[in-house]
Image (cartoon, rainbow, N blue to C red; front, side, top):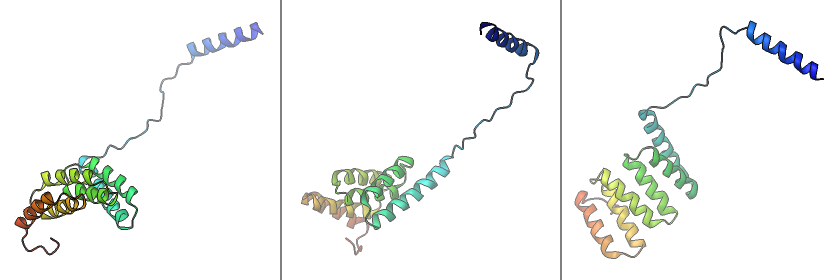
Length: 147
């Protein structure tokens, strides 16, 4: 048995010495790295899906997708608004106020942000803050029927 293993080892060593591979081919996987433009486009698509789930009453799934969309693109106020609506649907009012503050930093001229904030303040019974944010929204668009 020892002689058998010795012969196999000798033949394999001789084979490696005399037979050399000139070219070795390997399969290298290809990875697609999306550009920033593609990521922003996909984040809007994910945000739309989150809004549709919110419309159909699937609040938890909508919240997860909205969080993902905001993580991909933090500079779009629409995604922050979708996230805040999903948080309101899940009764996460403090988180919704944080999301609305982020949207307000991006675009402070959007009156809808102020109206939604005042609605949240009414729900958590902070009436003075609701009144002041509603007034700020009405200064931007005084003839808004939703206000």
